[in-house]
Each structure stands twice: as C-alpha cells, then as structure tokens.
Amino acid sequence: MEQNPELVQTENLIEEQKWTDGVITMVLTADNHLGYSASSQPPRKRELRKQQLRHAFQQATDFAIGQGVDLFVQAGDLFDTTNPDEQDRSFVAERLAQLRHAGIRTFAIGGIHDTSIETPSGLDRAKADFASSTPAPQLSYARLGALHYFTRSSDTSKTPNSVQVQESKHLEPVVFDIRGTQVCICGLGVVAGQEGDPLEYLPVQSDVERAAISLLILHAPIEGFATETYLADIRAQVNRASISNQSIFRYILAGYHHAYRHVSIGQCDLIVAGATQHINFDDPEDEPGFVFIGLVADGIRWCEHIAVESLQLRRLVVPANEMREQGTKDDHIDVTESILERLRTLCTDDAMVQLRFEGELTRKQYHQLNLNHIRQFGEEHCFALSIDDSALTFLSEKEINSSPGGYVSSIHRDERFSPREELLALADEWIAAAPDDQERKALQATKEELLVTLRHT
Image (tube, rainbow, N blue to C red; front, side, top):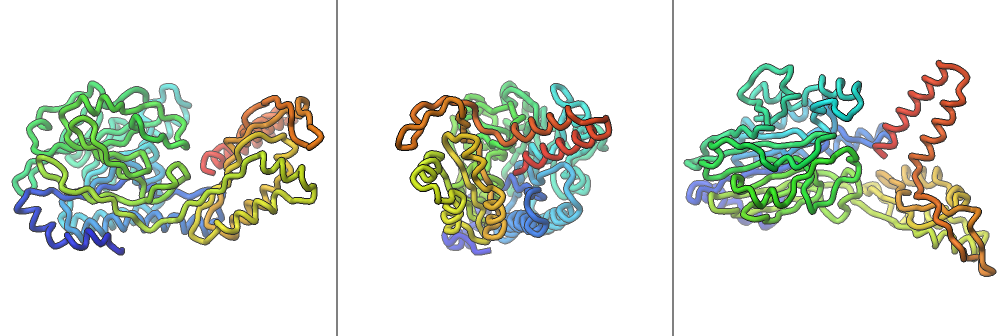
C-alpha cells in the first residue's frame, strides 16, 4: 500500500521516539463490516464487494505491522453479522496471527451488527432468542489469545471464563506496561434497542485513574455526529456533556460513525476511526480509512487518518419539477432517457452511484419512469446503483389544476413517497385475499424476505 509521504519522512523517527519520549503507538480501525454485500447485486459483484472489505482491513493490519505499533484497536463492527462465513473468519484469524507474531497487542469491542441482542425487551421474542444464542464471532479469537475482547454479559452467558474476555458494561480495565508507561484500556458498546446514555454514571474501577494513559474504546452514537440512517433501532446516545464531565479517560477511541473525526471535548480527545469502506451514502465527502496515533502521558503526538483504496461515491439529484417541466414542454422527451444520459457521465466500474429524486410528483408521473431500465443500466455501467426515493412527495391527482402553460397551479400535498410502504401494503392485500392458509403462509414468508431485501438496498 502506498503510504502518506509525510509518514514516510517520519518513519525512521518513530522507533526512537517510542523509547526516548515514551510514545505509545497504535492503529485504530472500526466499522470494517466484513461480509457486507447488497442482496440486490449479482453474485459476482457481491463477492467482489466482500473482497474489497477484506482488502481494506488488511491495509490497516499491514500498516500496523510495517510501522511496528504497540497496539491495534478495533472499535466495533468488525463483521457485518453475528454469523460471518468461514472465509471471513479465517481471513481475520490470519490477520490477528500476523499481528500477534509481530508483538502487537490487539483489543476489540462488539458493534451494532456483530453483537447479539442483550435482552428481548421491546423486541420480537423469536428474533431476540436467536440473537442471544449467537455469540459474537470475536469470542473465538479471544479464547485463542489472539485479541482481548470487551464483551457484554449476553456474549459470555455460554462462554467459559477467560482472561481474554471481560464484560464491558462495568468497564473492567485492562492494565499493562509499555516501556515503563502504565496503560489502561476499557471497552463500552451499545446494542439495538438499548436506550439512554451508556457513559453517564458508569462505574469505573480505581485502577483506571492510576494509569498514565487511559483509553476508552467506544461503539455508540455520539451527540452532534451524523446518525447512520440505515440503523433505525438505535436509541442510545453518548452526550457530549457526559464526555466533558468525565475525568477518567483522556482518550476515547470510537466506532459507529462512518466518517473520521478528531475533536476535543473538555479535557478528552475523541477520535472517531471512520469506516474502512463506504457502506452507504451517509458520508459521501469522507474518505474511508484507519487512524495512526502516537500518544504520550500529556497528550497526542500525532493523529493521522490513512486513506485506503475504496470505491468512489457519486450522486445525481433529479428535482421532480425538472421531470414535470420536461414532459410539459415536449411530450416526446423521454424522462428516463434524459436521466440515463446524465448517469453516463458518472458511471464507472469503480463507482457507487446514487440517483436521488427530490420534490413533488403525481403517482402517474412517477410510474412513467422506467426504473427497471435505470437499474439495469447501473448494473452494467457502474459497480452499484442506488435509487433513493425518500425525498419524493406524491401529489393528489384530484387536487391538481393545470394552468394554460401546463404547470401545477394548485397543489395539495398528499403523502411522502415510500416504495417500502407501497410494496408492503400490496403484500398485505394479497395475504388478506389468499384463499387458504398455505398460500397465506407462503405470501407472509415472501413479505419477510422482501423486508430483508429492502433493508439492505
């Protein structure tokens, strides 16, 4: 991997600084989402996507080994599921073995995607029972001594005691010495359905206060940072006041948010690793990567975000009034073809493109769009094409009056457009009209599969 030129210039000084200045070096990564792929993509592209995710994580571990860092920290959502496939499990095992062979200590916490639900309260009982019976995949690495994993009680309920696995909800510290400097690390994360501020009033053992460098690995939403839109069941949030008011941790190393950030809140340095690959379009301007950090007892010597190879994000916004005006001025204009012409300039093999519709349309106007043709074009000309209808609003046909020029002069706002709700309403109609129980069950199963697909597209 091609290194940052500024880092190359200082590479020879790092080892000397470790010993003479007491600098503790580390690589911080999070939200690697190994195993993620969009179910709407063909198998070849899904497999290619998984390879890209693995390659991005390996860039972080290779960099850590090349720099000879002291610590490798993974701040949640290493995997995109609690049950990753054998290829991803073996891949991570190999990377962890390389880190251990290089003398690098590895620490990790669970994330929203790769940690089971702690309790069934307020959630579907069957889903919660399945999730609670699925231990976090990182536990197997912890049992083998490949990393130290901060976990919750739900993950350890069926796991033998191990010095490599500790329950993070009480913030039990791991304390060790690096070249005469005492370092303390704790881990804290949240799960789907959890509420409140997980950092507020949290008991911490006195060992943390005695350490020269105290670190908290965190995976949770943080006040003031953009929320990941694809996670609808996350109600917990770490408030900035909680970070500012606490005096235990000088450094918080965070995951969950997919964009790199380094801010000071009170006396604490908060470093958000960011994702190693784009998963959606929430942070289109931010480069995926990991963080290279040098710490001393009295502050940060350096904090460098290292970009990794990744797909390009591109977005085409189509205002609804443009589509209405095109159809009004010239009935022969094909609105779909007009959109395809604009997409051609954005679509490349290494691009994820989002087509976003905004504004007000009638249902008739919307259904004149050939979305299947657009999706097929995207599949053939770019790595992935996403169609975002969330900012569309339907106009009621009964309340529309057209002026002589063909423009809408009286508009009644009907409802926000939601393909998900439209499809589910149609599915419910079919289920209700089914002639027997067998067909109803089959349609219900199809509806559930549809829900899963819509959640990942």
